[in-house]
Length: 74
Image (cartoon, rainbow, N blue to C red; front, side, top):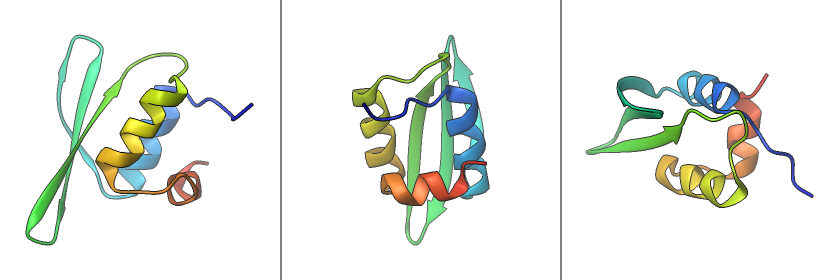
């Protein structure tokens, strides 16, 4: 079974990758990163464990692979 990450770890990794927290509504945290002419917006639910499908969605939104994100996780 793949390893599940907490929102805290994912948020820290995304911030190391250059994303900036811009807002929070309830338990959902919105991060933004300027990339070329476009910007990337990522929504991360502030949960203890992020489900696999949600994690895949976060990777898609961040335009990253799992390996790339894991490189920023300490």
